[in-house]
Image (cartoon, rainbow, N blue to C red; front, side, top):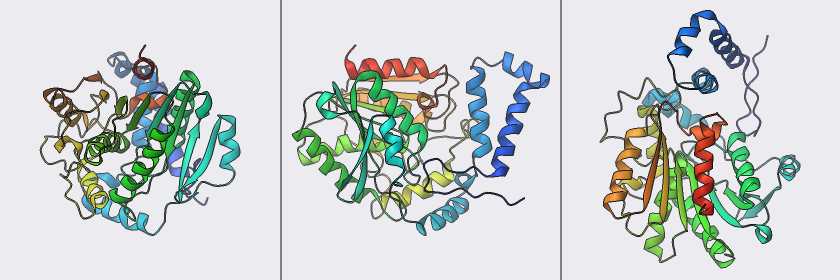
Length: 340
């Protein structure tokens, strides 16, 4: 049987038969009696355990070595960022979403600005190389629906064909437009690479004399792209998605001519004075956990009003996965945005 290949630029990509087989094997293993003792000794929900196993099953391993990441970047460079397929507009309409072009970049918006009580600028994750995924869009759509919020999601340029500079130019123009149309509080939020970008962009706003948003939220933010000052070894076996050697190579591609220790790339090296009220999330089974803790302590030392929510036993960007453990995090996000 011929294996199906994933369409890199489809928002509902085909999954290869090999990956489907691996996922089915993981599901069967959880149902086997031999897995009962493991489940009993694990405080996570069964869905959280299953989610981790599926993440391991679909992980192609390119982040586990510099060579693997370089090969991935080479293949990625041959394919330019794709525009949203035309059919996707009808899909978004069902979720009160729309697409517009902003200087050649697609911007997805959930909710109507005129009717919204809150405005959220959401920056999606994906190690600065991966396009937005359905679970990002589902999270943003639900956020808009719950809070009657206008959620703006730019499909910013990605590495290796693009780097930080184009994205900062895009975000600066978009944020100026948001300020000019401002009718309620603005939150800048992101997950993983998008979370690090959200923080770094807020630091950058001070250098161009633009006001800060009212709230800043980072879901497992990638705050140290250099990844040279922390012992990650205890976390590498726990994280089913990320690994240090590959992330370091991808970070260099995103940084372009800048050092990976430049605050525009790694906000852990930046100045946090004057940043807005900040809410951070991290799971103890993710490789970024120690850096997020270090960044939080740095924010507090810089006098920021910051809170770190640590979820024991959770994986990277766990609030996005619709797990039982996600509910409390989502409720906390809602309270942060609404002031409730």
